[in-house]
Length: 316
Image (cartoon, rainbow, N blue to C red; front, side):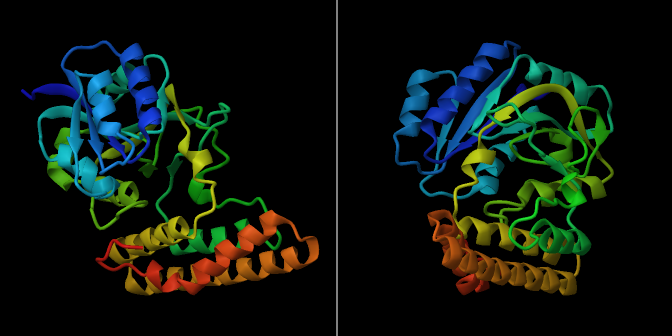
């Protein structure tokens, strides 16, 4: 018998108000017994940890001396082995209604369900494509050379399953970490998140290992949350783009072949070069600040692209 039926893990880094809103939504909508909330603070500088302890004295706040990343912060709690289920919940989410209880009821309804995710909405209530297929070399080539048609095409690879509006139950490959409910017995079998994935890609690798172990990864629209991160992630950042590229290559190195990893690395480099050229040309003709910013983004990615090849170093 575990100490808790459910442990909700939230990783925070300078998102104090978002976490307060998230906690408020949890306590407003979930009243079951035998559960706890742990906020892992990655050395925030906005007085987050003190505020959480003051506003919500019943939660546990773990204070890290450094920003150890998403995977390592979650692992601090997952390794405790003191709960039947763990829910990874992003700091920039808002729980709607009884989605927590419905999620628990759903995953317990079938012993083969190891992981489940719910319907995720943007702040404007449009659907986020938070489930996906495992990446392959062909899917990445598709994304690069068709999604990024000259001057901005709208095509998206089937890897993201964009023709499915997340309105039906189905087995999937990947449930993203903004809302990922997992059985503790699965963690004990396959291990915790791989901390070499500092930011991006850790849940894809985790789901890959979980599926290989024979567990089902399920999506069900039994309830909804709002995830604000999709919009904030639209802010231009070459560091973020390089970290994402590095995570993709790391996944291929670990779970595919080195040849495929090298090819994916080259394909994404060609993408950055082409976009740098396209946006530079557009800026020459239209002189718009957005074109200049995009050109600068991709040029920085090209100049620093060597950092996208995975190493054991976490610095950027």
